Image (tube, one colour):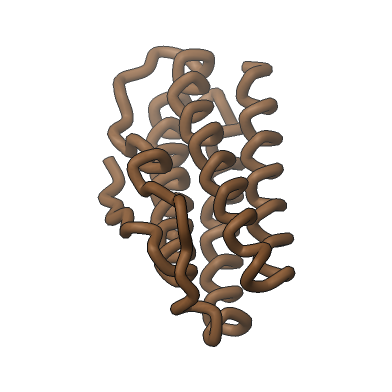
Amino acid sequence: MVECEFPECTTFGSVVRFALELEKGAAGVYEELAKAVPSAALFKELAAAHKKRGGMLENMRQQKLNEMILEPIQDMEREKYIIDTKVPKVSDAKQAAKVVMKIEETSSKFYTDASKSAKSIMAEAYRFMDKMSKDNLAYKAKLETL
């Protein structure tokens, strides 16, 4: 299990912190599943993708969003976006894929809603969050093929 602290999404800064925790949690779950089902290379690939996304978020936060961090955010209830980072025992790739498809769905919903909130704050943040949402749906589609 990966320990994550999901903050309330009340400012744009807290939304970015939530996203960082989301990526950390997803990467951790994928890493654990890669150990449990070594034959599924896709889990290692997606763990690396989520780690990279976390780095991109951190970079965006540090370099481009300093003045936007305190902007208030409306209508993002953190409970709708919290992912389960407890990895159940799995016996095969198909079973493991079901676990992480829920993470990808939840992450996509988070990034879709965050992109809508970011649109009024900064166009670049909107495009970034929108891309993250689309990436989550692409990851889910890959998992559905297992």
